[in-house]
Amino acid sequence: MPHILIAPDSFKESLTAAEAARVIREGLSEVLPAARYIELPLADGGEGTMEALVTAAGGRYEETEATGPDGNPLKARFGLIHDDRTAVIEMAEASGLQKLPLARRNPLKTTSRGTGELILDALDLGVEQVILTLGGSATNDGGLGMAQALGVKALDASGKPVAAGGQGLLEVASLNLHELDTRIPATRFRVICDVDNPLTGPAGATYVFGPQKGATPEMLIALDQGMARYGALLEQVVSRKLVSLPGAGAAGGTGMAACGFLGGRLEPGVDVVMDAVGLRAHLKDADLVVTGEGRIDGQTAHGKTLAGLAREAAQAGVPVVALAGSLGDDYEEALACGISAIFGITPTPMALEDALAQAEQNLRRTARNVGALYGLG
Image (cartoon, rainbow, N blue to C red; front, top):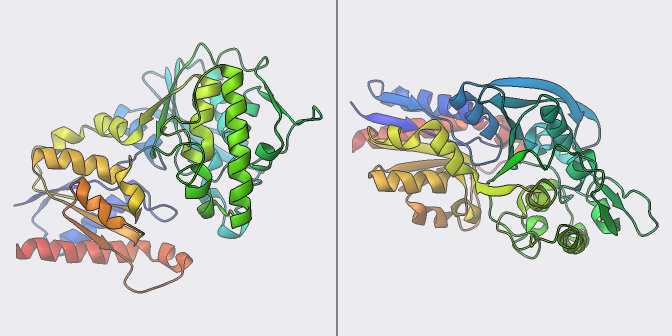
């Protein structure tokens, strides 16, 4: 009787990691009903990281109101673990890409302010530590909205507050931290990210992630230039090198902001989550790992869930099969991480909206086919 570990990340905008694990199990069970299954949802700093950490620690959630990425109020929650001494704040909750339909995505306007408001709410509860997870943001404002919510003054050349969103990067001429919430320096911030991109340039926040957030080619040029000026300004204010930090470009530059304004320390999210859920112990008894996420491409090998999982599985001598909502450029690079096989789940070319709507049935069917192949072996 094979022991199969099902450990996916979320399929962004369609299935949470827990939902994906359930669907994969249903597909495998159609042809391998006698197998022993363990569902272990994973995350890497993006969507689902808060849930994975709170579940592993037996924590709880607080719900509050925050500013959404488009400036409108929304309901958001954050986790509390370690006897309520640690808050787990997921940027995607208040500032996430999934909060906006495709037609309303515009990185010149989307703001990270709501994430800062969640931090304030957590501080009001007396937490000693904040774990801030950065993935899945709809923003490219360099974390400036988050900082403004915490008391930072960002002014243009005439001394007026800059506009919200990425537009503020094009205007900011000075940063004043004198009114930064006094509890920030006394609080430990662990900043969990799922990418190692720098702040600017061809591999930076704007050019790599801006298009999925609604940026046009013209926006990309302006936003990257604005991000560079803003980054240099923040380095001067805090007297610390930030722009070149691996992960500074996470969440539209919020990685840099979290280090500069909050004094945070960037950590690879997948390592934090794998430790929290006890992945290595589960691998000891596994014969096969089935994982997956919404998209596998050249970025997968750089700090993403599948790369970290494959590395640990390879050390344990367990083969890994990965399922993807879509396969992007250079997806084969993920094979070098230790993944044995990669399967796209979309059976025919289709619009993104249709692929998202059909994700569950496509994932179940592909998992069933993987189970059939495994059974033949």
